Each structure stands twice: as C-alpha cells, then as structure tokens.
Image (cartoon, rainbow, N blue to C red; front, side, top):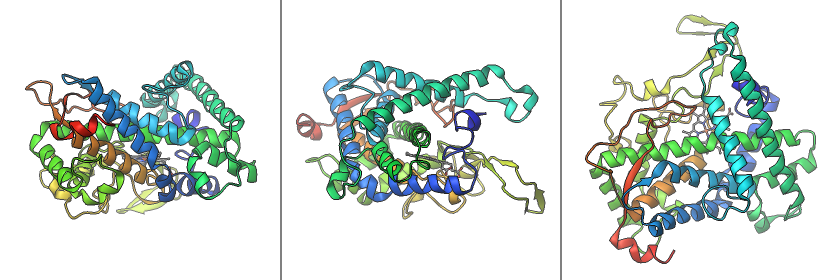
Length: 404
Ligand code: HEM
C-alpha cells in the first residue's frame, strides 16, 4: 500500500519495478544528484550545517543534557533541504516559519503512515480502509508541498539552465531537474521531480540520523573506544581547525566505528522489499515470478556463525577494510542494482558529523546507567528511546569553538 500511495503508484525511484522508467530515474539520481562530483560541489552545505550544530552546542552550554536525536535530525534535514531546495526548515535562520511547520508536519505524517504494519499487504481481505485513507490524504499534502517548492524555484531560478563551470556550484537539485525538464519536459515532468525529491528526503534523513544516534550511543557505553577515536582525530587533525570530509581517509578507526555500527544496527534491517521478476530456483526450491523477498540483513550481520561475538561492539574487526560492504555478510546499503545510490552521501554526512562531535566535545552518559540500546519500530530501525547525553566542550578546543 505504501508503494501504491506514497510511491506514486510504483513509479517513484524506490518503488518502480526494474525497467526503462526505473533505469532513467536511477541514472538521474546517480549522475546528476548523488555523483561524487555533485557531492563535492555541495560539500560546503554539509560543512556549514555541522559547524552550526557544533556552534549551537558550544554556545547553548547544554552541558547536562543534549537531546541528540533532535539535534542530529535537524542537521540531516537541513543538509538535505539545502541540497534539494536551497532552504533550511529546522533550527535558526528559517525564512518562513509557517512553511517550515507545514513541511515538518507532512514529513512526520509520511513517516508515521509508512511505518504502520499493514496486514492487508499479505492478506488482501484484511486491508485497512482507515490506513489507506490516511495515506491518500498524506500523499496529497506531500504533493502540494513538493509542487510549492518546484514553483518557487521555477520563479526564482537564479541561473540560466545553460550555465556551466563554477556557476553550477550554487544550483540546487530542483534546479538541476528543472534544467533537464527544459530539454525533455515529458520525462522530467513536475510529478517526477517532486517524487524524486521526496524519495531522496525519505531515503536520506532517517537512515543517516539513526546511524549517528546508534553510533554515539555505542560510544557512550564504550568510553574507551570513544577515547581511541578522539586520540586518532587529535593526531590526524589536531586542535587548530575543525575536521573536514577529506580527513576521513586518514581516520580509519572512525571509519571502523561507523562500519561496526552499521553492522550491529543496520538502518534498513530488512532492506527494501524485493520481488522476483522471473521464476527461478534457489537451493533447489522453485521461486515463482512475483514473489516478495525480504532479506533479513540484521540476522546475517549478527550471525554468530559468520561473526565472532556478533553482539559485541568491536570496531577493530573492520580495520584494514575499505568501505561498508563485505560480500554478502555485510550489506547495510543492500547489494546489486537496487543497492543504495546514496551510500556516498550517507557515509560523508555520518563521518563528518560524528567526527566533529567527537573532536569538539567530551560526551558522557546522563547517569550511571548504560544507554538503553533497545530498538523501537519504524521504517528504518530507530532507538526505542531518544539519546540524551552530557556534553562538555573539550578544553583544547575552546579557543577554536569560541571563534566559529
Ligand atoms: C547510512 C545511510 C543509508 C543507509 C544505511 C541506506 C540503506 C539503504 C538500503 C538498505 C536500501 C535498499 C537496498 C536494497 O534493497 O537492496 C536503500 C535504498 C535507497 N536509498 Fe539508501 N541508505 C542510506 C542513505 C541514503 C541517502 C543519503 C540517500 C539519498 C539522499 C538514499 C537514497 C536511497 C534510494 C533512492 C534508494 C532506493 C534505490 C532503488 O530502489 O533503486 N539512501 N538505502
């Protein structure tokens, strides 16, 4: 039902079946939106938002208790919205509070309906009419929001579509898509642009937010590992500047912490539902065409037959590894042609934000008790209880922090 209503009748990038339409969307997303060169052009947005989070934590002096889930969510939403539409909806410097409020409500409603179990997907005669009505209502509100942003960009297009070179650095993703619309209006119609935009927001925010929240929770429960990460950043980056994305190549321990978090708490524990496009045979079983396949990567990545002490947080096990993929035993971003196209962006956001928080602050649990690591419910796997922590600027960083 989510694919039908929120996935624009199975035409959005995440829901479209394999074929020309999906291939085209995927090409646009990978080449025009999430390619390394485009991500590089937009790296200042990520750096700017992380800096503003660090500044906020420093100046607010929220020593006793920081609501980290909220802070991280605001960060990822602002990064995504600035990349896509060139505006912030969270925290300070929000141009239109009413518009931001409406957008947040629509997004919250989307995540809520998308996360509801729908037994009707498996037993059609139990279909919930109430859930379906709410989805239809929610889709209407989402489409209105997306259309509003598209119209606004169309009116205010700052750069002619035939611009090139450095000028392109200020293009938002809607502008990129509007430029493509000029060359092929049928293919890049407003509905396709709106749906791509919403898929990227949906796919890119909760996944990265949850990864950072789980990682920080694990670190608070393992202060010795937090200290090791801090030591690595001190050695490689120092105290005279904030870390940047290019430092990640020299911070393998931080990379291992992220990999270990993605192994233990993959944000999409069952990937996306897949469907066999043809009849096939697997281990002697005949699988009919059209069978839904849910891949339980949580079970694979936490399988004691494959991983030693799988429930132990041991970043060291990833030392010497490149990236977050490891054959079929580790695939937090999925695998194959439907694997995540936002892996590069996701890892950049998580690496920079997590590294900067570790570089600038001392983090401690609120009390003696360990951080509650129980899982809640949702489209992506959230923590049952939002993470709260004590936060103290590191003495070696105070001078830099007071200048940013
Ligand atoms: C830590 C961050 C992220 C994780 C762990 C993650 C994980 C995943 C997974 C497991 C899938 C399904 C793969 C499959 O079923 O084989 C997926 C699909 C997808 N992800 Fe991500 N993702 C992350 C970040 C992002 C970001 C930042 C974006 C874009 C801004 C994004 C956009 C998408 C899209 C559009 C799809 C559907 C692709 C298709 O069906 O062709 N993801 N992601």
